Length: 450
Image (tube, rainbow, N blue to C red):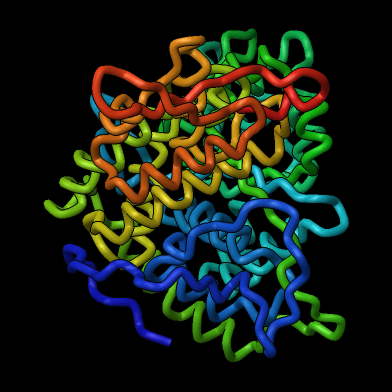
């Protein structure tokens, strides 16, 4: 186990050169059940957070990516409101919200949160004891947990407020929270949106509750079926759920005689985490290294901006992909004992956002009108929109000009595997030109096309 490095600008790191994913590939040492949903790119397990997941993987049936997002969320909550980054004129705090979505019996959602809770109880026991409430029921209740002090103008009596306004909230039955937010007159959705932005909290009612400078991170557990049943278009349009990273989780190991992580391992990890978290709290503005900034401009932002062109449930769920990538990269960097975002942190965040999008596509099913691959979705939409004219090979090249020919060939081959799509040679004035066309399939298959 490596000790965390001093807080310095991030060095360059070579990208992984192997496609192997040891967290999910079966081995003789790991009895891994089959996975019914997407698998995250190994790049998400970056830096000190990734190393912690590796150390704990063999001790729990929880999904490694579930442990990862809990670490990012809890770590950002403990760090507090000190570190931030500017995205346009918006000040983004180190807050990660996630919905871990998995089957009731096989998701192991609680196991992931409890693994992180145990580690943080050893690293920052006072925070876990005082700053990890549950039971979101109303906007007023959340504000009360981080309320300001106040003075009664009639009596002059002073009411003490909450000094430490950091919270890590884990809701094991998030479907109940969603139902509460839908009640007529409920302020919960609006207050949650304020909290994600790191804004002062308040509601216009007789109590006039206020909370300045809150720092609240949130993890919700829910099953795919319950999420689909409870989600309504008005809720997504309101922007509450695009503040969550939807993360598909599934039991990743079969451990019939599991006893958890050895106490010595937990204590060793906790000692390193204590140092990382304490130092990160003193960081102010976080910026990208020159290498990371170039990666953002040349690859990440163009790809994420392209995803915003779509519509429908998936587009609503992932509407904040671009700012969330930078915010997540900042938390990766801070938890890697760095005060700048390196290229490896940005790549890890980008990979996690792609996994969240694939998770949303898997969870929402055919109604999401997507394949889970943003590039394939973009091409499929362009072909559909072109109608009888279709899209030529040359137009595909222009559309994905940053990609090489083998990559484009693979993309168009996968397009033609989807129902209703085909590549047709068309004779022009010169040599034949390939045109990609879409003819809606009849019957029940039609809903499966992106």
